[in-house]
Image (cartoon, rainbow, N blue to C red):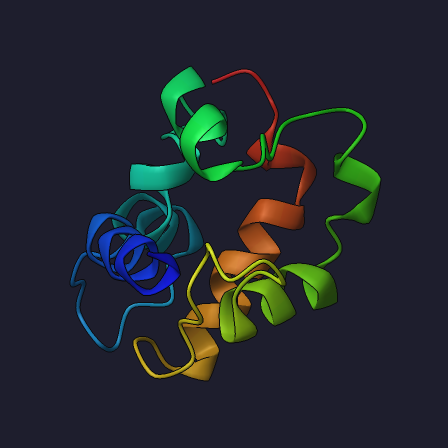
Length: 110
């Protein structure tokens, strides 16, 4: 069952973008928004079914350093529900997504 959930999440949470792109917001939209929502706030269904974190939560924001976010993207979540993306996207893209998610602009009103 865990393997099936991981496969579903991997398919749902990934989308191809140009391999040369290092545009953090565009990469987030392509690879992360399906699960975390376009603004970092996942749907109630994603929270209930997969415990997807609200990346805009004031309680979580202090923990979301670039290094922490990079590790999450690269290695996946400890519970295995977020798959690792180290083989899906290159390091510069991981760094760009992490910098975007950790930045104050990520939660700024849009």
